[in-house]
Image (tube, rainbow, N blue to C red; front, side, top):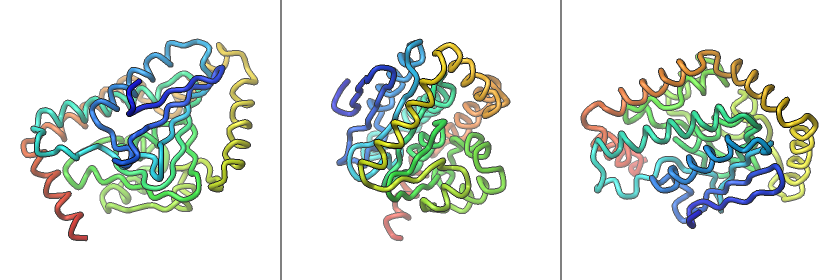
Length: 253
């Protein structure tokens, strides 16, 4: 792993930590590639029971890294967003428990990464938002609607809402909120680890496959449709200009 992603295996638990704190752990092309490779390897590991995703520093993930927008083209952005959607699908369909630990800003593709996990904990306080629609992007919409309901998902996405921890927990977007102390998190992780270790690995994988069918009843066809929506939205001419206009508007707020 490069310095952008730290990977640590502890028996049957894999910890992946986004390690770009100076960039708010934003998803660069390199980081998305490393995450995708790590998740793919993990999914082939029959002994793995739990994948934990966290971020170094104050924030979990502030979204898609646009720091070099001037060097991007519509086509390069389309390719990067497509790889993000494929990463989200791989996390969502993982044959073991997946846990995202959100703190601080959890925005855009970072919020989509949080929503793709089967366990979604907020540590301390967090703010979450799904701003991609503001520059014409359809990313993660169906997964979010499955978690919180279609009317609420539409309200958040179309209205550009920023959610606090209480709202995220009440809606089902987050499954738990913990105190900011290490003791609370350690105890909660120990409880989750005991739960996922209670059954043999084959049974656990079968259960997650069955639950995944309920979480995404459209299955592979749904994944293909989600990807098609993303590609169609990102392939519209002027993507880079729309993103630039959105960023300029945000700076004025």
